[in-house]
Length: 152
Image 1 (spheres, rainbow, N blue to C red):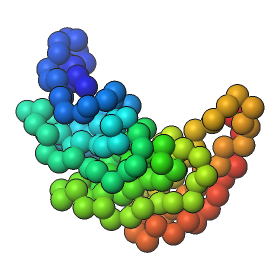
Image 2 (cartoon, rainbow, N blue to C red):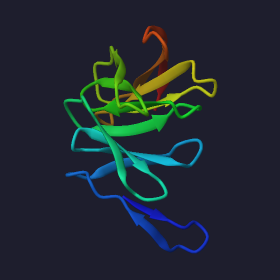
Image 3 (cartoon, one colour):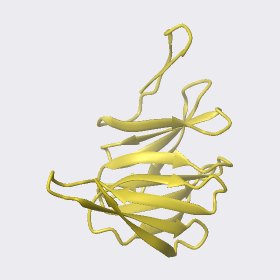
Image 4 (cartoon, helix red, strand yellow):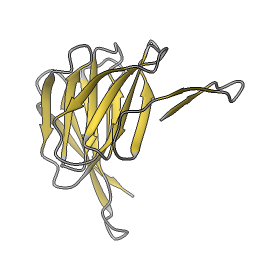
């Protein structure tokens, strides 16, 4: 992954550490860290100033599609081809929750603005798939609160 200066277009950092393609990259709310998600089954937390790898989040059994910070930056949620999402402690890398229940790949996961809920959505596996369930979870307990049937 590469960090660019948005005003000048100058390359600032090259984040090296994943062994397969990077699927997504996002800054923490305070801009001090970056998390990348990769096909190598991991997410990596980086120092946004130095580009140094701070910790590797390992626990998924297949590609990680996306990663997102909680609004306070203290947690990260990752979404994976292994049909799960995992909530991690940003500082320690400890696995806090595993969100399971999807029957297809979890393409995306995000925290609510207050950090109390997480929404996950599956990836369409073919053009004929029309109903894409999204699940809203309690971010503290991992309890499934609501299932939304989305239409492509």
